Length: 381
Image 1 (cartoon, rainbow, N blue to C red):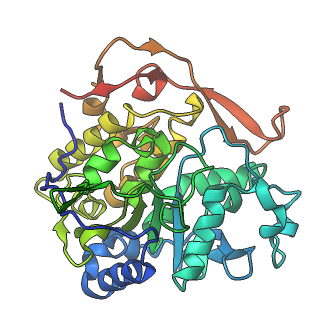
Image 2: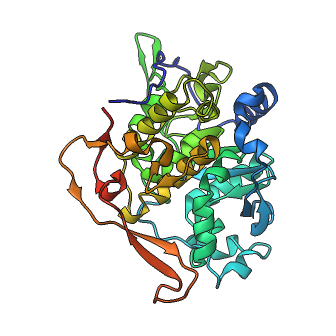
Image 3: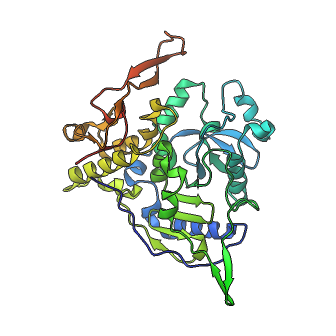
């Protein structure tokens, strides 16, 4: 069974963190990566050569409104967990109001705390633009929604950085350390005159116990991002394609050694190992993805669309129900890790004709030969 190969590093030093994160540390991490890491942390070579640009709706964090933009600008994305929280979504009806100055803040508590915190954070960092799915995808414009989902890979790979929220289990969570009282204080105790402080966890350990790493949608959001700021209950981590930083010792850098680096996608179509590497990369993604949970079973391909679309751009291979055409005779040989039940999932796609009650939506069943047609973890032996 193929598994992600994360670097296991020693536990971090014991340093007392303040109640609030020092935003200058985050700015330094982003600036140093942008200035010194070169092509490693820039847009994928094959994507950049094709000049692929995505038309976006972005949040202007200064004027608190939505603005039509493109992926050529410097923008951030938010990766978080919706959970069962009911929140405002952009629709054809409220879009004009959201595009007015102060339009976003005018909805008050209809927008969850995690989104307001992300808006305030981007503004505090001296940045201007933020992409958040609930507000930047028009939920009842099925053509625009489908286009945005199909281009999710480009949206995240072309973003300057992603804010990933590891705390809580839904959109009611706050950004830990951005406001006072929003993150867990380190436990301290004095024994015989010696002050003891709880030791900081690594990013890998933090992800393993977080609900964030159990969700289907967050997998592609994390992998596709060139840079991530992870807000956990105890500290902030920074991860780019070259290194991992942690707030406890902000000046130190841990080399990043993962099999599923975004940058490694540029190597998939390079001979002589393109076939072997392409299969192993894909199999690793599928095995990890099928262990995760989705609120809606019909999202199984949508939440994988970003990864498959980027692999299409890098490899030139079309995907059929989650399986790459160029490796079809091999990737169709997946196997269940345990007993799983078959579910005829339904997938909704925009239609050119308004023939049904879903305003131009056709219904397609998932085939049994694809792992997408089943619920449960699968593997490639």
